[in-house]
Image 1 (cartoon, helix red, strand yellow):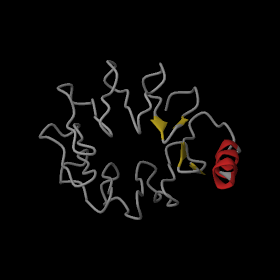
Image 2: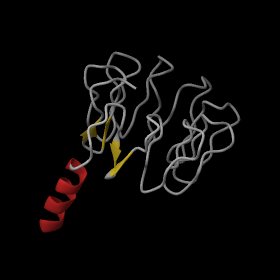
Image 3: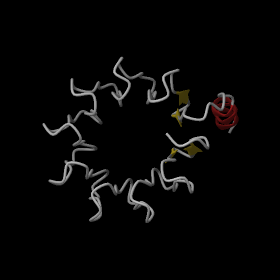
Length: 145
């Protein structure tokens, strides 16, 4: 109980920079597109993201999640052992495939809202700005990314 309260206060203490996202208690670095996930920072290419200790491959849009690397199409992402469908912008997360709009992604069993760029992560839906994403109960600030 005490650790939960301390953790909540710790996460709430981050500054409200509009493009910064709070992920697992870490805030993004000063480059607005850089995101800190699970304690790892992205490499110097601002679109590269480090997730679960793995770094992205050399194509800056490729991301390594849970030990899987993206396929050769740079926009394809492998999450949780599932690969995306043949449309390169479709992503499979947690065993769910994206819907027919190629930019829609299913995360953790939740589908995105009707705006195709909105994504549901961890049971939270994005706010009305379509680029806002809720991660682990924390939402991005009002400025869209």
